Image (cartoon, rainbow, N blue to C red; front, side):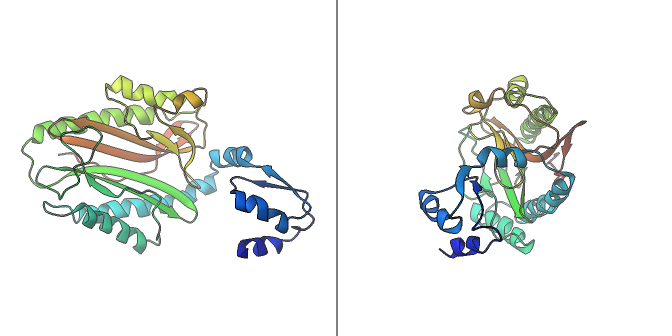
Amino acid sequence: MTLIDVLKNIDGAAAARRVGTDAITPTFAALLPQAFPNAEIVDGELAMRAARRIKTPDEIAAMRPAVRIAEGAIAAALGELRPGVSEKTLAGAVLEAMAAGGVSTPATQDAAWVTSTEHRWQRADREVRDGDLVAFAAGALAGGYVSEVGRTWPAGRMAEHRAVKLLYRRSDALQDKLIAACRPGAPISEFLAAYERAGEPVPPMPIAHGLGLGFDPPVVSEALVAAGEDDRLEAGMVLAVSGYVWQAGIGAVFRRDTVHVTGNGAQVLTVSPVWQG
């Protein structure tokens, strides 16, 4: 009711003839006519999607602080990474750093986890040990805009140093193919094709999704691609692009970058370092 009172005080609310919403609950469907008594309430979701899909140069500039905060959060967590530390401590370092940067609510649920050496898609759910590959994900909502970054770093001493380096090379090769798919006119199915060309199984999570004012379209996953197989990328879109490779006995390398699709191809906005061995 407080929100409805605020809406009532918008200039022209009483005389408005048409009001669009991009999402609405049954409760607000019943309450909105109190704020706009002469208006027809219409579905504005498609119009909002179209508006949010392409970012202006000013919006790209507005996203950069969110990129820096997310990257700073991962850097802070890396400062705590060592054998014996818990996932909760690492996640706390991510959240503390984002709060220090002015972000009190993260844009993603995940923060830090030990990748499993036994199951491709599962987590180890334990304290960090020597040789573990630990994944970090940070999503910052700053100034109204979201950016995301993900990195994986090894902890302590590695018994399989050469195997870990080979796994990271696979990750680099996959990410190069995913970034190359970020070009105007490319179908979103190109992200799935990038995994196929790299010889890597497609993870169950979205491998690309729009960024900006939230979890924007498109959302690309193996389960959803059939619904948007004709969807194509456009210059001005910003995407979170995620690579994931796994090796039994070693673990997984997860990587996520914020990528701006330009008329000349992909511009990677994230600059966080990647482990080189």
